[in-house]
Every structure is written in C-alpha cells, then in structure tokens.
Image: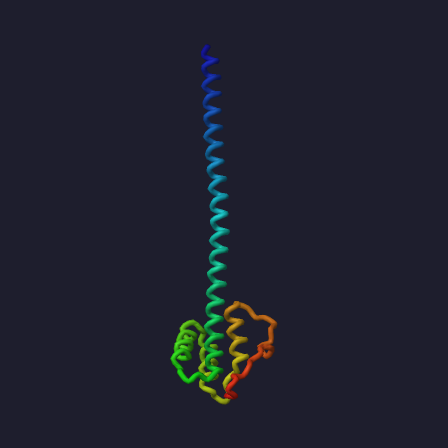
Length: 143
C-alpha cells in the first residue's frame, strides 16, 4: 500500500510540475511575442516620427529659399523662416545659407545648399545632382 501512495504522490507531483512548467512556458512565450511586437511597433513609430521631422525641416528650408528668391517687400516671414532654419541646421550648412542669403560673392548657390541639406536630412550621400533642381524666376523680373 505504501508503494501505491508513493506512486500516486509521484504522479500527482509530476503532473503538477508539468502543468506549472507548461503555464510558465506559455506565459514566457506570450510575453516574448508581445515584447517583440511592441519593439517592432516602437521602431516603426520612431521611423515615422523621423520621416515627419525630415519632411517638416525640408519644407521649412524650401519655404525659406522660395520666399528669399521672391524678394518680398515684407521681410517678416523671411526672417522667421531664417531663424527657424538656423535652429536646426548644422553649422556648415547654416554658414553657407547665411552667406547665400547675404549675397556674398563666393557664397554657394541655392542648389548647393539644398543638396547639402538633402544629404544632412537623409543621413547619407546620394547621387542626385543639385544642378538638376529647377529654379523659376519671379514674374516681376527681379533677379
């Protein structure tokens, strides 16, 4: 009779251990899957946020240069856009932009600045030649 009790105790203990182990494994695997999905979502969200920031900064620089080329009489918007660009541009590009906006003789042109800003914003060099950028003169004939 003592052997039967030992066998039953052993069987019950084994089944409890198997049940607990199965529960722990199931919980662990579920948590791993949830964390993996969360990580993937976080990476995609961060990439989306970066893409939106790049687009916003590109639009700001494009607005600034388009406004500057148009020779506006009211310089308020031009000043605001210049100030905003100088808050995030790296020093080299900001210096080139400043020289361009001041019409310094040896200053890089709008195409060169956009090309450098493009490399900075994309985080890599690319093969697009900035000279391919079309710039249309204002209707009033100002240059």
